Amino acid sequence: MASVAQRAPVAPLSPIKAIPCVPGKACETFKQMVKVKDEDVLSAKWACFYVGDNPHSKPDAFKTEYSGPDEFFLAMDGSSARTRGGIRPGIFVNRVLGGMPEGYSGYGPKRGGLEEEINDPHFNSDNSPLVTTFDDLGSEIRFMGFDYKPDERGKYDVLAWYREVRIRKSTGRFEEKTRSLRPDGESTHFTGECLRLK
Image 1 (cartoon, rainbow, N blue to C red):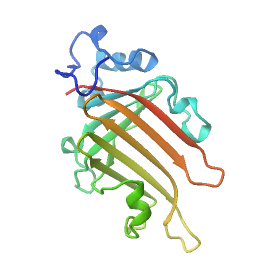
Image 2: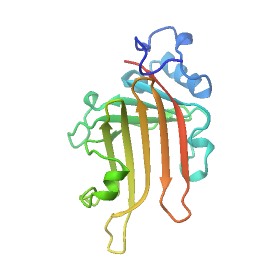
Image 3: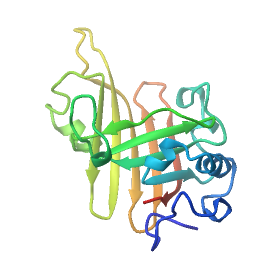
């Protein structure tokens, strides 16, 4: 199976049937997008496919109306695009749901994971309802999203849930964890492999 560490990237113009993505509905959708030269696929550096369960197979809180068995995500370096504010984050991620790309969202330039969020009182100093981070950890890359709910003063300093994705550079394997911090909150854990495109 191919991975981020493969010797040569899979060029989107290579024979479509030879693209070694994880077999399944997501791989079929990806190959269809390659065939029509979908602009999101052509701009991506990685295409990441779930092995086993994907977010669609979990409770309603973790899926959308458009999610399905062909869910996968695309990732590209932040140097390839610019956010509205002019900041180049470490990575952009685009989830493909039901054959439709959602649109790239940036992770970064803020750094840090859950440990930093818990121990740094200034982690969300901008009082934002959503904070995204990106870290190059050497052997892997990590991107995280922190969703806050307002407290009784209307300040967004109560962490409601977080999502973490780690991609191992040497193998392209990834882990994705989402955890709700509500009293009745649910957690998910998914794994898969990323195919290097560039």
